Structure formats: C-alpha cells, structure tokens
Length: 248
Ligand SMILES: [Zn+2]
Ligand SMILES: [Zn+2]
Image (cartoon, rainbow, N blue to C red; front, side, top):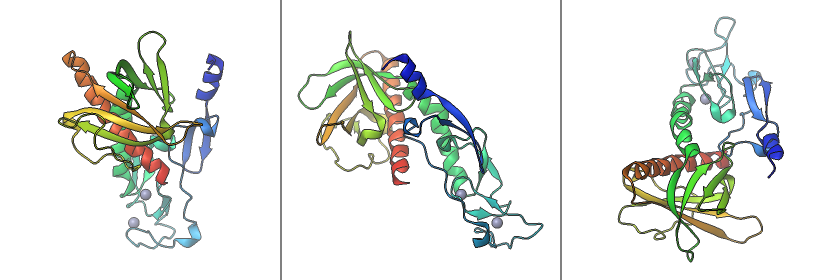
C-alpha cells in the first residue's frame, strides 16, 4: 500500500449529528472495527413520559435522548455526560443510567488497553498447525483495522481485525492448539492473570474456512513477558467489543 493511499484511508472528517460532533473516517469502509453506529432516536411523539421514571414531559420537564440507546428520558435519568469513543463523538455525550456505566468501562479500554495493543508485544507465533513458531512483534495498526506481525527480515503478515471469528486465551497448563472453540464467542471470563497465549481464528479473502494463528508469550526477559501478558488481556477485551459491534 502506498503511503498516499494509507493517508487517504486514515483521513477523517468532522460531522455534526443531532447528538453532537463526530470525527469519522472519510470512507465508511475504513472505520474502526470496534465502532458502533448511532442509534435511531425514539420519535418525540412516541414518548410522552420518561422511559425510566415515568415522569410526564411538559414545559418544565424536558425530554432528552440517550446518545447510546436512543431512548427518551428526563434530565434526572439521562443527565450524565460520558465519553463515547465507539460512536466517534468528540466530546462526552448525554447517556442514560443503563448506558453510562457501559461507556465508562469502554473508556477504560480506549485509555489503557488500546494503547497496549497499538504499542505491541513480542510473541512466538505459529500460523496454522504445521509451521514452526517464529518470534514476531504483534501490534494493532493505528487505524485499528489490522493486526500487524513483524518477524525477522521481510517477514511481515497482516490479519484484518474484522475477519477475526474467534479468540481463545491459552492459560497455564493448556498447551497451544488444544481445546479450540469454533464458536464466534470470545473465550470466557477470567484466566487473564495466567494467560500464556492466545489462538485467533480468522477468514482470509479467497480462502475457505478459518485460518488459525497462535501467539505464545515467550519465556525470555521478565519485562517483555509482562508486556505480552498485558497485550493478550487487552486483545481479549478487544475481541468482546468486536463481537458487540457485530451483534448490533
Ligand atoms: Zn426520568
Ligand atoms: Zn441509554
């Protein structure tokens, strides 16, 4: 990809929606795979009362729409302004009591874990079942759309994040490649503390079925091992967000 094309793909524009200012990709297809669409707002005429506390709207009690779910509330039930990066809002936006905590947890992902994913970590990487593992640095691209893997010399691979079908944590005592789930659900909660690796299954354009990739945290220097473990936990969280984006 030429740098000019890459720059065009990363280009963003400012748009104003009824909910607020959003910084979105120039081209919809180049949006973050973790993104969520803005919900349609419940029409004013369909909600004479707050959908949480049932207070009737009038001249004094004004109605407000939650930017995350699009439902209609009074100010008391929808007064929190919280960052909503998955919908590309520039500023914190009004959200209801159900949505605000979810967005706060995601803000933690954007503030801490996304940075880990972008900075990358070193793993022993196996593609499929046959190849022998090689040491590679794995990181998320700045557009969030690709996992980039770089090994010795020219060895460079990319996995499109939107094509990842399943992610499974490998924990202590579970050798890589064992007990693979073929569902599209990410692995169950827990086990992050002892995470030793991860398998990713993804589709490849033009190829049938799923390709598998195994990342194993190396046994070398303590610092890089810790970074690899943190990266795996962040990727696990990212897989959950990815799943929600698809369910939307
Ligand atoms: Zn209310
Ligand atoms: Zn809401």
